[in-house]
Length: 179
Image 1 (cartoon, rainbow, N blue to C red):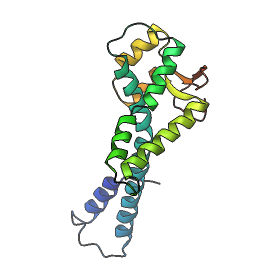
Image 2: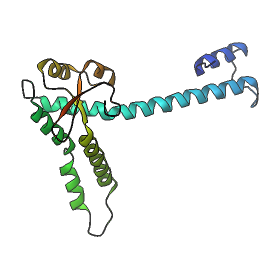
Image 3: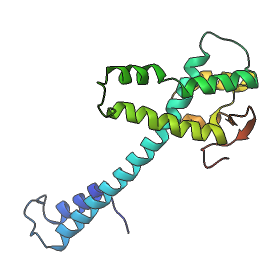
Image 4: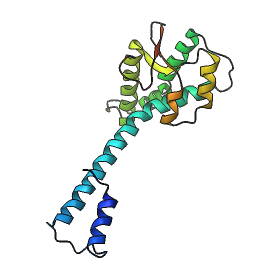
């Protein structure tokens, strides 16, 4: 039966008259506190990993939202394809600048490697179908423009997979595989 750390701490301090710092190292109560603390840390690690993995998609939708500013109307499939390609190429200038700053014969910097790896991963995804918000009709576009910028708000949007060959397939939220 899992209990939160503060609940266990409260029960032990109540039982011991408010003094939890006088526990013996191997007592039952000390073991309960340690295991509750370990549970809290594990849950925090799992939550942090989930937020970090979801942030990629939040940033992606935010970029597409900012790319829509100044334009009106629904996009065609060709425009969706061009917008997706420009998203993948968004760090080309930064990559080129990092390569020019590097002295000849030196290994690439960490920033340069990160940009290359991210771009290669996005290119692979683009070949199979790049997960983006659907901007082909006015209702979907207005939802993207009204989106608040958080992960939980993405479930109201509709998504598609834009394939490099020019095809646009419907997709689902959250992104998994090639759905």
